[in-house]
Length: 239
Length: 354
Image (tube, rainbow over all chains, first blue to last red; front, side, top):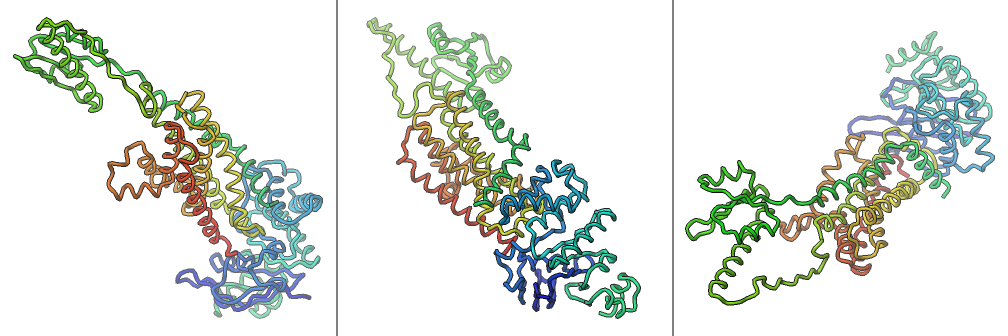
């Protein structure tokens, strides 16, 4: 499998506080990577750096063999921010169309992608409603649809399943697994431990550093734990 | 290009769904302008003047000058009489000396009244003196013929004020609406989300300038046509020059508004810029004479966009200047706009370093 993302010796400080401390990580296509850790651990800063929105103080990142930041890379990265960045005055469809038209897509391609993304997150019937009338979970789903709109090779989802009911969460994860099998690289940040189990590879982040990493099975064995809550607590203690 | 038009279309969609903001943009300036027009063009009330020991000839003359005369007798406390009888002035002749007491609640009106009464008294005394010496003269002295460089005898303060007002409204409303437009995008996180797409910073600034620029153009046209055709404002020069000045001013307001929105973290903080950025500009826009101000204050006026716009607007609308005469002012407005647009590009680096 091809390496798609490589993070080398990344450090970042905001004033006095070290947000990220010499992070090293490589990722391959066709896998789901979970960044797990408490809020304020630096997960969001790290994913923003992969997108190219934040700049590391030292170290470098390359995505698809191109150095970040890079305009052509942004076409290949689907990003779902932690807060729903939507236009409440517009309908769901208008939101999708607006973001779709920021990418290089042909007219028919755009139509197909909008239909596909809306169906995936189960919003097809609500597309003509204004977003201001959406529930929290519907907004989260629309944000996910927007992240998928340009059919990117890399998918970066910052807390994608917050406020989504278990049934839909299940179907979203099924879709993520299908996307991964189609060869996409997917990064998911979460602090819900049971979601960790569905990832292929996990990096536990705390205070700006990766405290442990590995596949879910490896980590459980290493920390003699039955659940991921335990893994996290044990790994934190060892540090 | 496609991205710019997508962004512009989105701004239109948002604006048309926000009826209140549209109303603020188009109805509010007309409402305020109409109010100012009515306030400044109200008819003045004839001043009431109390007199004692004044002969009929003078009273006649005073009444001819639109004053209401009340003949009083045996006044001891002049000031109290003025206040109690609601008079503007009290004229009396004690022995051979004229004495005029003014209420002076409005110094401007009182000065004018004083001059008028003095003239009438002096004139009457002179004519009397002449007729006593039994010389035949025409009692009505030939009036001095008065000409005006700008305007005419019908000119009101509103005519001088109105060009500045037009400029001010264009500046104020465009500043506020464009600023809050981009601010909403910042606070809702959509600006940051935009930065995760391949859009360029220049494309965002351009789209905002075009999107809100269209509304600014429409607003300018509505205000200018309303002021000239409905409120009958004085317009000596070309209406196209007026529109051009306002468009440049709107561009400055637009770019300044979206620039300052990056220093505000809420709509309320954006409104806090009004007393700091907008209100001081009114003082330096020419409503108050600049010549009398301290040198450093005059220098301060030179960094205010509204100063140049008001100067050009007054020049075109009231003095009838042409394009060549106002090109200096226009150039400076262009420089302001370019400067603010450039700073906007830099400010957006906060969201993406590319």
